[in-house]
Length: 310
Image (cartoon, rainbow, N blue to C red; front, side, top):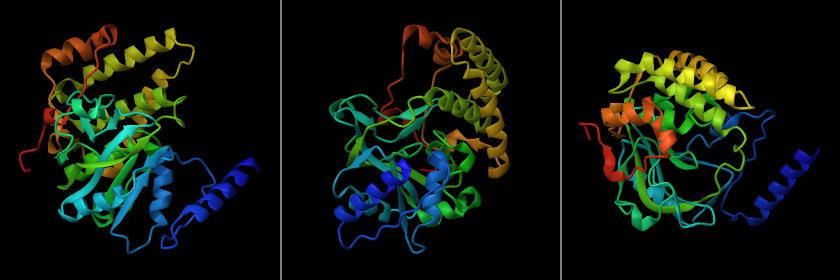
């Protein structure tokens, strides 16, 4: 009953606040479909003639006119399939994302996250990126419908966290582009809905991506996965939650589902990516000393390597 009342209040709020020229369609899900399934539900309810679709998190506040500016960039390149603008952390001038990146040791994240705009070189320029952030992403409907499994932007089984990364990789592997555009887009009050499940889904996502994605380090993938599973088992012994190894198992199962739906193995080097040295891979990641040294990678646009065909 409480959920019904909340939904009614939301409808009343939107109807009171929306411009008269804007049409709104409400779609209610009977179950929790996560980000991927929820966005796909909205995708199915879109106007059949819509050239672009925007995906938004429920904890993001839009900047006025940002959508119009994003559309202008999309109109300038028929191969541009997805994009996001500059998004700040809620109640902060620190950057949440200036586009997404991937590395050849299967780490994915947000460019310039946690730093100020003046610390982020190239933030005022258009750049190609590995993936567009699902917090506020615009896509070309025709391209996504054509290249994505089942004609939907996301694969329902991913549920959470893998969705925007996977879409970006699929688009690049199919010969399309994903970009960051220099438009201040909004403020993201991140992880308000996912803070209690973030560790599980991030580990599940990492496991699936390692199995799905070929990189320069693929020759050591089998050993790397053994190290990862062993590390998660040890983590479960030291943690009262005991879900790290389950996340690994579920990520392995998810990778098989995704591989069957995609029909091919993804290649990171068909997208812009960050090249990691063998020394950093072995010392910091493979031997896990990055956790001990608390060393994190802050990625900026200038670190991305574009595929040769760009």
